[in-house]
Image (cartoon, rainbow, N blue to C red; front, side, top):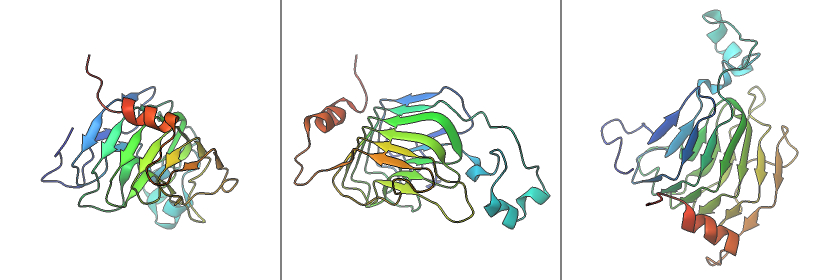
Length: 206
């Protein structure tokens, strides 16, 4: 997929909102003005207990605070090759998330050359995602968490990823996050496991 969103440049190539058991795999996405793959919706406002951010903004004057989880869960974002995205817009990433998504795995994706923007961007209310065995080459923060004192972003598990820079905004043990096994690669000397992800990401021709 390439050169989408030419008129409405804030559109993503792939958007999955309140879905269960969906898989997004082996796409090549490039030459995009904004985000490659966006997962979730609602900024955490519809998750159980709501969001204090949106209490402060008055949202729950016009909608209820829900007590049950949404249908957003058990997604897999795997084997995608995303490059040369975020060419025009801001506040996005190769892979962008919103709201709680229990059981969701973001793995074995290759994100490269995205104009200094985030690799994975866990925006407001993103919870219960696992980011594992991804490769980030020439990005800004390779894994970014939008967290403040009153939103529910957190409970993110980040394991065994490779990146060409050490810039990351979330910390191990903070807000319920866990981070292990990050390998920072210099001079394009990618280990075998990273090279395998880079080789197999993207479209598979049968």
